[in-house]
Length: 412
Ligand SMILES: Cc1cc2nc3c(=O)[nH]c(=O)nc-3n(C[C@H](O)[C@H](O)[C@H](O)COP(=O)(O)O)c2cc1C
Image 1 (cartoon, protein in one colour):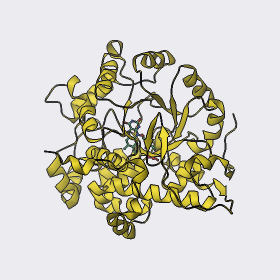
Image 2 (cartoon, rainbow, N blue to C red):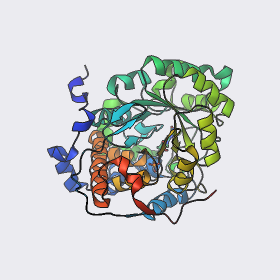
Image 3 (cartoon, rainbow, N blue to C red):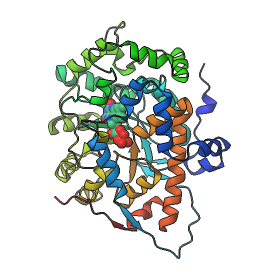
Image 4 (cartoon, rainbow, N blue to C red):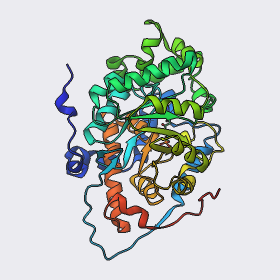
């Protein structure tokens, strides 16, 4: 029986990590997300770390995302009383405790067995958006039990048989009371990530001795594997055989998923899904315009965390052009390269209403297991507060008034 008392979220305005002794203790050992990354590298088998941390090509996209954030300067203004109030935001009519959320991720239980559950529980507890990935390890019905107040759901294009599976997932999401549907636009073709491949994550999947040795020498990981079992792909279960193994699921993914959503298809999803609809992976203002014209409610400016193609611009560099193009007609959000609350504030200053992180949460899982995701949220919230306070903004909504130097901004 699940202990639901532990999952009851605090009201958004009451969530203050710094008041919590657990946060204070963890903060001493892991004062930033990058400390978690360093620890995760030693704490999980090599294949798990390479899966969470590796990018396309030689990681050039990841490096660009980080450098682009670092280059954004914020000019402070003084003379205001900054009492560091809570940093809650409203997204699509719902109140969250901070403008940061968990990005959708496929296969997080490769990184840490049971990962989806820990990510969902942490987001529910802190009351921040949690986007369950279609290729995640948990069904959306189960996610809705764990994270009823903060659940969003991400869908890839499943177009066979007139979108039979895609539309069935939309029906299930509606029945599970998912709040926001996110269509991922930026995986038109599959890619391989060299670090993953070199560490043994291949299709077909052929685990080798190094992988077993890695698991056996990572006691925390092994314990969690014992408890939660091997990675599963819960959402896909109704569409695959009951006995499907990892290879069967990979074959299913190859057969059923793929290609970018066309604009006509976006319009069809818009017609079916009556709640907020978000398109993730937009990098060009004209595509953002197109989303708005189709009645999409939000956009996530993203390059998939540098995991698809190295040559894509950093989302923070195209964000101003996209916010200008959207002109307040839809909610603009961002991911890719967010490592701190300061990065979140940089994104807010350049016009985003919220930011999401992917790898940061996986580093937290890799370093601390079940406790990791909440510590990452806590760090981000405390850093968002202190960064806003430092630049003289009282609330997230005041960040766009800050003067910004942004040398990498792309002009279309
Ligand atoms: C291991 C991993 C798996 C991912 N799987 C998905 C996915 O299934 N669907 C999706 O839309 N994005 C996926 N992403 C991309 C994230 O949603 C997000 O765009 C990206 O991680 C943000 O960049 P960051 O990792 O630098 O924060 C994945 C990212 C990682 C790290």
